[in-house]
Amino acid sequence: MTAASPIEDLLRELAPRVLGVLVRRFGDFDAAEDAVQEALLSATVHWPKEGTPANPLGWLIQTASRKLVDRVRSETARRRREVRAAAQELQVSGTAAASGRDDTLVVLYMCCHPALTDASAIALTLRAVGGLTTAEIATAFLVPETTMAQRISRAKQRIKASDIPFRMPAPMEWTQRLHSVLRVLYLIFNEGYASCVGERLLRVDLSSEAIRLARMLHRALPDDGEVAGLLALMLLTDARRPARTDSGGDLVPLAEQDRSRWNQAAIAEGIGLLDSAVGSGVAGEYQLQAAIAALHDRAARVQDTDWPQILALYGLLERMTGNPIVSLNRAVAMAMVHGPAAGLRLLDELDERLPGHYRVAAVRAHLLEMAGDVEAAIRYYRAAAGRTTSLPEQRYLTTKAARLHARLG
Image (cartoon, rainbow, N blue to C red; front, side):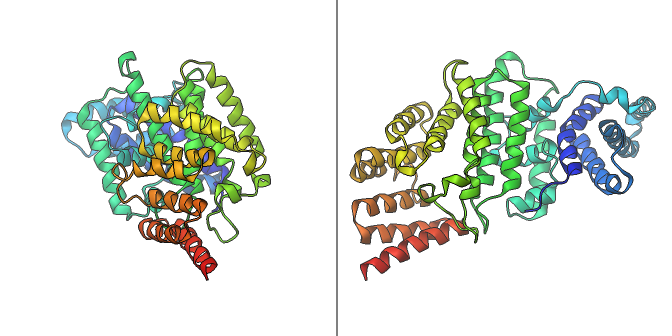
């Protein structure tokens, strides 16, 4: 994947700030977001040839504002007074606007509003806060651009219809809204680190964008333990990315990875964040997940992994969240501590909670293989391969079944 250019990085950083200024000025999130996208496109055309302006934020604000004013001018006479006022404001240097408040966090909260579905919130966050185009987001999620455009449009219309004020949430709204923001960033990262569909296992653009946005959130909320925990989890997980695929792009499981290829700087940063978050109050779900990731990363060899501690942490996380995927991971940890039969007993309880899920079949195959039941393991590896929509995972599971079949002779 081609690395982002310095201009692209700058535009992604500035996009939500420009959007914040326009929404505050014009009061229309939908129209402002479209105008910002047009300004970003204009910048990608002009800046490489003409050079980055001395005040890139002011340039973007003025360009986006003019585009929005031009659009508003075509509307009814009722809006003409607002247009004249806005046009007069644009005569002032963009420096004044650029030096004002940074509304990035407010934009992020609006995009992750609980009224939106996860899919809509992810798409809108990537476009409005991440600065990705609709085409880029559609490519990442393997859907037609028209489908993604409709999803984003519906999300913006829902925000407009809800009359959400453009401000930070009131104290009573804070917990719910922050939970939504963290969940959306978590889902973006997961899709980048372990893509659910398609040929590629990794989508580095998405996981990297999730980390960038989590860093931004952590800078704004440095004392929030769960924000720090989520960033730590992303860093500790992403540190293993260089060893997660082979030269052909196929999956390499954690137990078989070359740990010398793990990113030690990211591990150190993640552990530092986790250590600082632990003392900030009661540990939340992202801190617990980060603690599990840290135990894996600290083990120089797979046999050095502290599985009893991981099992204990999964127990806490399961009681906290009730998430069946956590229960699935706990079954693996249980097998590593108490043997495959103990893990298989936990899996039996998950068949109704995760009916037909490929990961249940894959974990059952792995534990059956550990228990020496090769024929049953082959059946479940094949079943898991038939259920997953990720081609790298499908190839890995099919290969596992084929190798076990060869052993049977």
